[in-house]
Amino acid sequence: MTSVHSICVVANTRLPSQRAQALQVTQMSAAFQRAGARTTVLFAQRRRALELPLGVDVFEWYGVPPGPRPQLVPVPCTDWIERVPRMLQYVPARLQEQSFARNAARVIRREHSGARVLSREIETAARLVSGGAERVYLEIHRVPGGRLRRRALLGAADGVLGILAISNGVREDLEKLGIERAKISVEHDAFEAARFRELEPKQAARAALDLPRDVPLVVYTGGLLDWKGVDVLIAAAKTLPDVYFAIAGGMDADVARLRQRAGGLLNVRLDGFQAPERVQLYLAAGDVGVVPNRSQPEISARYTSPLKVFEAMAAGLPLVVSDLPSLREILAPGEEAVFVAADDAGALARGIQELLADPSRRASMSQRLVARAPLHTWDARATRVLAWMDACEGGAKPSTSPPERR
Image (tube, rainbow, N blue to C red):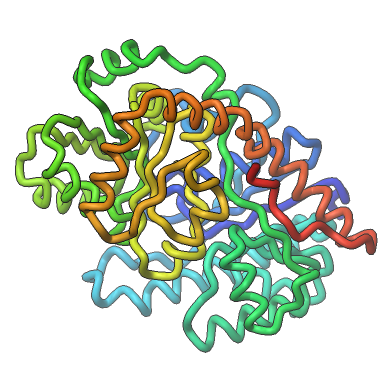
């Protein structure tokens, strides 16, 4: 029997990988461990995991400060997704998900029967609660659209003690499915405070990245999936030749696609995936950050809780963002970010110009963002989540609201 002070985090992700999910899982698990919960991470043992530099472990790679570490447990799964063309990957992806869920549930029943379980995977939670597990929680980052997966979600929701929603949009859609509001707590993503305690001065950061010293600099850090809207940003850059754009992040195929879209623009640099400890250099170097999410799909408009927003907050980097519910629930319009119409390169360019032309406004935004940032560290999030779990298990009414924006 495992200690009641233990928690298992279940995530069907590679560790490490180029996706933000892996960073979120690693940072959140480390914060649980620092908060006093003995933490085990069950992750997918998949092909083609990212290779780390010699002598660097996963936690160092993701910028976790020195201290107690969670236990990492790779879970075997059927993995031949990438052996077939993308258009044929639906079936192998479902097989991979189901095999991971089955094996993760077995590991928990066999080795962690007394622990709390926080599962990012609906299928794992469903298997555990159907088998009688009592201390299971779900973390939901998007509400599935398919009938079978929604049925699995509802089945799991009946048996779990609580559901952690990554945004108000997720919570609203869970409620529409019939899940009671009292069972849901909203917790946005966060950032690692240790990575942002000693930021490089702006010019030093630009020098370290070999970026232009004396031009207005707009930075984007994060994934390059279509819904992230980076193609809209590139279109905006074409109309702002006197502004330099540094774009860091993304999978190799997406970087190649966007480089072709940029068509040799001299004021745009796509640097591709960066080690996490380099991301803050980009944020320190910039005059303005951008979050140009598209209005569709729902994950962009209503579900997402972008890590890049909280890291920009920690760095005090003023933002221009798409005017979407997912971003309005995090940032105060006008005071913490300039909001512009989504999918509109012209509106994005005007928002960037407006903010670059007003240094005093940028300074005011920076001060507000930095002042609010402590609410959004991984440690603060872990403390709130563990207190919520205590309330769920003790019968007290748990909080269902994220930290106040202002």
